[in-house]
Image 1: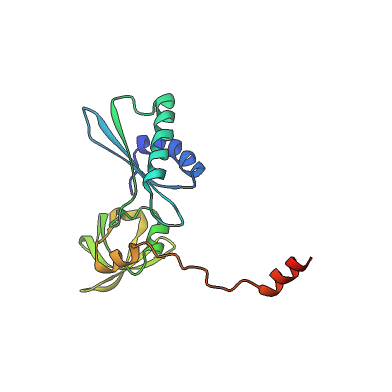
Image 2 (image 1 turned 60 degrees about the vertical axis):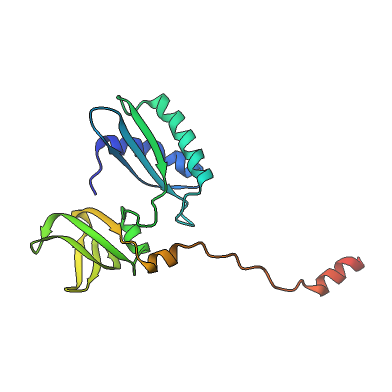
Length: 185
């Protein structure tokens, strides 16, 4: 994925802020030209792959204060902090491994075998090669370095997998022998 120098600069500022809050920076995207630019910072809790509203607010406030001091964007901009969403962009090799088994759309920067757009089930990544199982072509490998854009496809399987898992109550019985010996002392 191509990252502009400005996006890299903001990511360098945002990464330690996110990490101090226990979050992982997914990516920074800058859109809009001329007038006010939109600086989108996408982050998540690495354990849950989500960004609760409280964490989003804290990251936004802390990053906004830092950007006011560091002034990485010389023109007017709007800071937007968000989660990757359910049909998230796939940015890092880590993402392609984590979402193996789910449907994805991948667009290449340069055509491979005359094709730039691919859609199928992710089968992971090995080294720099992404494996994608396509319904019409079978298993194809795509070089990570040639990926222009990749995104998960919203499917029933993805929706089911993204639902928060209910906490399982602890049903173990307390160790009565230990409790008795503590009470006898």
